[in-house]
Figure 1: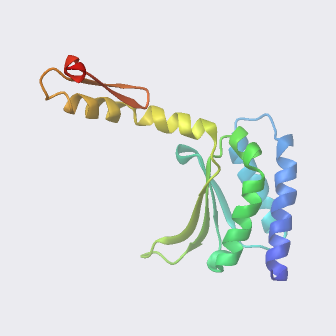
Figure 2: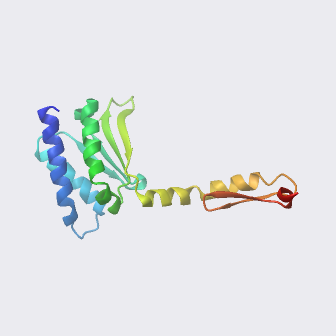
Length: 161
């Protein structure tokens, strides 16, 4: 691992250890976490933009430093080590990468921390789709299909003949 990457990951670890002492102000803990990491990395001489995307529950780190795939993976590994902390402050995902330019997309490594709350939210967000799908299967005579949670249930007296 190159020296610059080692310093970067060390600064990230220090930032993660500071976060439990977040302030009690209107900024969310996830936003505070992003701000703390941004400050430490900037103070350490790194040109990194750290953002928290509330609507996606995603921590985004963008920098030319991440043109190197090894750097993206090293940061992803460090963040995964703090999965419990990140989940507790509603950071469920991370995007680590760099911008190729105005007319090109970003190159990012997308990771999920496997937060239980993320799974609950995903199930809830997809609930109406499951109900509609179950209703679309009710065209067969004598068969009733419904959605119960994440399970499709097919009921019919015909199943027992």
